[in-house]
Image (tube, rainbow, N blue to C red; front, side):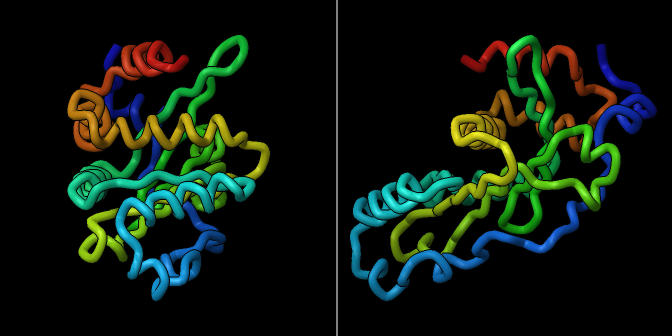
Length: 197
């Protein structure tokens, strides 16, 4: 079933931004010593980035090539809000994402519907472009909040990346943002849940 404009507005998302004090590092130099990173090879930087985040509680990470990063960011800018059905025992729940500059914030659909301005983030993905030219790398860090679990956050991060890098999945994000009358929420939910292991 496709949503009418009225149903879309009632069941989906107002275009208001999350409002909170940003708790994550906004610049790469807040995480890494740039003078030391600049002398390393791209492969070593990837290893350092992955190892650093594996050793920290409540963080996850991803590394893009420069081309992938630029495509992901461009697609995200064009379709900044999206929906992620997540499996849970006995059913599923919905998370919504909203891109703001170089960050993607995730909260539950219920919290977002109640008040987008006070919705608590469960996961924030922050993108870092400081090494695009020198190393050909775009870095992403995920900060996990509340009771959200690391394996759920990792699954969500990969779903998000797939939604903006896989052309067939990106069609859903574009339709959700630009053609809500044609967004088949039931079909999308069924397909997204079937892809989850």
